[in-house]
Amino acid sequence: MAFPLQGDDAVRYTSPTPIPNPYWVAFSKSCAELIGLPLANNNLPFDAKWLELLAGNSLEIASYQFTTPLASAYSGHQFGVWAGQLGDGRAILLGDIKGQELQLKGAGKTEYSRMGDGRAVLRSSIREFLCSEAMHALGIPTSRALAVVGSKLPVMRETMETAAVCARLAPSFIRVGHFEHFASLQNTDRLKELADYLIAQHYPDCLNTSEPYLELFKRISNRNAQLVAQWQAVGFCHGVLNSDNISALGITIDYGPFGFLDQFEFDYICNHSDHAGRYAYHRQPQIMHWNMACLASAMLPLIELSYSGEEAQTLLKSALEEFPLTYATAWQKGFRDKLGLYTSEEADIGLIERLLQLMHDSRVDYTTLFRSLGNIDKSTLVTDISLRDHFIDREGIDVWLQDYLARLASESLDDQTRRMLMNKVNPKYVLRNHLAQQAIELAQQDDFSEVLKLLNILSKPFDEQPENEGYSKPPADHLPSISVSCSS
Ligand code: AMP
Ligand code: MG
View 1 (cartoon, helix red, strand yellow):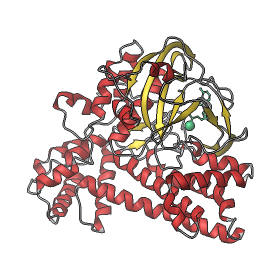
View 2 (cartoon, rainbow, N blue to C red; view 1 turned 30 degrees about the horizontal axis):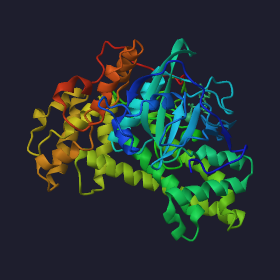
View 3 (spheres, rainbow, N blue to C red; view 1 turned 180 degrees about the vertical axis):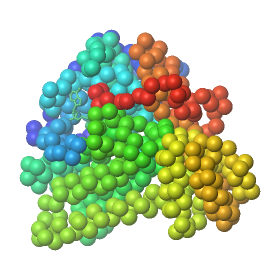
View 4 (spheres, protein in one colour; view 1 turned 120 degrees about the vertical axis):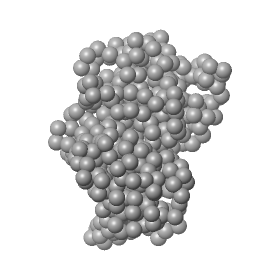
């Protein structure tokens, strides 16, 4: 079953609106393998009808049944404010393939489009495609992207652009906003259906506990705590952590004005429309916790099926309190691994925080710096460590490096083994905004080679790729900094 709820209050059966003369912009071989889709020699689907299918132009594929495409209703808090009903305004769910839901984003208007045109532009579709696949290769839970299909159909945003459809995959696209929707309608039966489905399909262990719904909440909350810790460690900013963009599976979904940190700033804001910095890098954990509080409120009626209102609130409150601890544990493990520290010492937290503060003060490039930490040998003299050149506060970094070397000395691993392990968590290549932008600008002139090239580079983010060294570098100083808007 692709989506657990039926009925007008939850879903609308909506076919995609065709786009004229579709063409392939990008295609992920790795996603094709995930759903067992046979490919031809050119690495595109063997059955040419897939282009028409993913464009939303025909639902006929011999071996699959996509008879009831649908859009679902959800609500949510946007920028901290209750926004009421939203829903799949431009994403249409076609069905399931091998445990993955196939959704077409930008496939035309649905019941939930409100004032929108139901479309997505080429620019944002390429960004979602590349980032989904890059995050997956980084080992971060995420929806995947099978393909981007383009068309010359004009779409108006700040300027006139052209349409594209991003075909994305996830075991489920259910969001916190789905729970909030039915909670706001005081429809406990619907909440129960959603929760029962998630437990049966995705969290079966909850049934081994005395209160499966409470356990479901804890698991969703803890998964999202771990997810945001992974984002922090890799320097990823989501950009729009509204509750309708938070997955019930704890995966990264709804890529919009996201950004990977170049120069490190605690308060880096990647979303040009986020004036108050609500979704700035250093606020992501707190905001995710806040979203989990929204989920807790929405799930309250489910806990009240077995407990009094007061007891249910107390139970959910203490379940929600697990979030900071789960997050802190995952964050510490993530950053210890980045520093190559495999035994745990209380003082490590201070060491990590001091490094981040020094990086912030000197606006050091995040990805390059962590990658270069692995080059340090235990016996190196501080004055021979080249990464100190990136810091304005030379004295500060020298003291830090001295402490780091002393700490490394207490680790039993030899330099080579530690370097190998560190290079598996400190990527060399991430989807920096200027790289995405370069690929988009060429794609807008019908040259999709750079999208493919980035896809290939980012599918091996931890490997040294000497031929692609330039793609690991921060943006050149002369490039204007790219500010990504919400428009997509
Ligand atoms: P987002 O900010 O992309 O997460 O979108 C928030 C809400 O607006 C969701 O309900 C989307 O489906 C809807 N939405 C965004 N863009 C469009 C569009 N071009 N057409 C219709 N609905 C849209
Ligand atoms: Mg969204």
